[in-house]
Picture 1 (cartoon, rainbow over the protein chains, first blue to last red):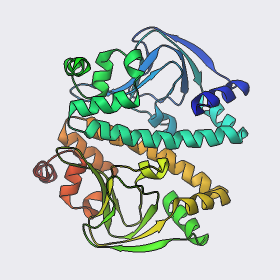
Picture 2 (cartoon, each protein chain N blue to C red):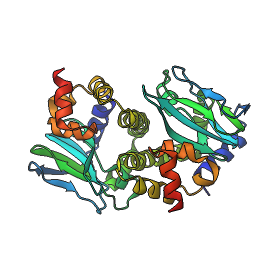
Picture 3 (cartoon, rainbow over the protein chains, first blue to last red):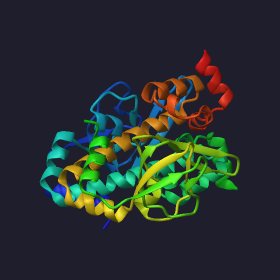
Length: 178
Length: 178
């Protein structure tokens, strides 16, 4: 079984306190400068995480139905972060507080083991993401992400995938059609 | 106490099997295409991790005395990876096999807890690194890394820091002197 699905199953079985949130398209779960230590499970819809520099927005994570999403820098450090979490489509998410989630992990050896594996998997994915960003050729960047996450292209509008891939929407359209 | 120093202390106390390696300047611990699941503690000297695309080398990690270094993608997946680990200066490193390290973690609750915190810290650092790479202004990239890792500039030659910061050595020199 997929470890994320198993984790979600254990969280439901443990009746972990949670809040269900409805988001309109473009609505924010978190904005820059705020602390957000919640973990979100995406019941439906899709979201992105981005930050801004003085020139533009940089989309750094994309999530859709069945994924967890969080401002992990703030979740880990419990300090404010400059990340935004925004709904790309109308969404329903289940929000868990860090303290409830931590108590749940302390009470379940299986959940704790899965979480540790998820963290390792995140480290691995972030190294792949770092390569994705640094590789110079837009075509090579596109191909790597298409191979790793084909579902992304069904779930997320091209303009956000283009920002995630550090290219213009026009370049991404051209690569899709070539 | 610094968690990395404490982890190293526990590893020594557990008499974890290890191999001491001497490396000449520019010598490789790992090259592209190989599996390397060892964890290295840097007793002296400094090393870098890089990969190549069709145009250039990209330095993605730098390590010096007192740090651990590993090709974490291969360490986690136990598969070949395209990363290189290379000595920047003459080095002495202590190499631990993953199976010995894993057995050590299973036998020590404290070590396991520290390792889980180190993994969280890695996730946090990788998000910061991702922002470092994406931010457009070279000056902003330089300032962020100087603030977070001032020792880097004492330990590592500028040309590798420049590659790490995605700029030419000339741009980095200009920023250092301005």
